[in-house]
Length: 301
Image (cartoon, rainbow, N blue to C red; front, side, top):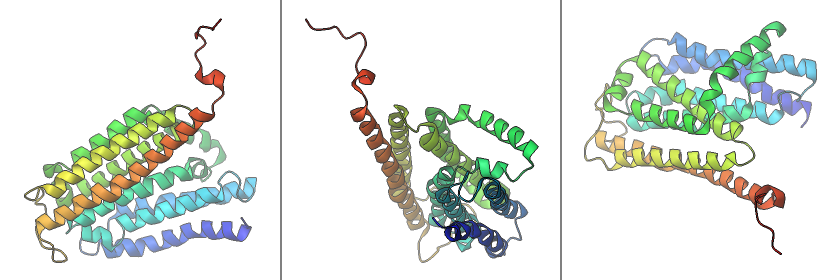
């Protein structure tokens, strides 16, 4: 890629950062500005832009932070802005299907794109040289035990299940602070899950484990979405959820939200599982004979 294209991709981040306050103001005009939301959305891309600029100035354009990874970060953060600081987020306070769409964007679009971007090194470059190692190493040391594929899968399933209990879901709709906590926990568990699937399980036999975990996650989301879709009465009665939106009755609103979780969400996990399973089969088929044969196999004679 040319330097012009690289500069263009990096320029996406300041544009997103500049647009964030206006979008967040529009989304929160009814309730007043959410300073924590502004900080959470605006600070990471600012640090990432600074880090990539310093890294490329030192190592050269495209080195240390590849063009594709910068683009993944820009696209992932754009999706995050759409989910949390746009009219969609304001609609999610009144419509269950919009709430599910926000969760879908955060967990199946934003999270995997940010993982593919591998942003930790560029973010570390945003800080002074002496601070990089002691900032990066503790973060990796803290999350590495949780990034075991089975542990990360269990955490994501648990977080998603708990936050869809009627009492907690209604509380999140009614209380902005709880709502923010809900989004943080869902996004953090999704980041941990996708990091485990796409990075920790990359190569070798662990791709098969990752495919199994993705399939298990798909089954969980499919089951929860199906239960929401076929339920004979609404599960949730939080603030704003009982009022018709776009001509939808509360039960129809819930059914549409269940379908969003069931079909598009399930397809993302299923597609990722199939890709990793195919890679695992390909590696097994092309592995040297000495890697797949047992050393204890008796010789014929």
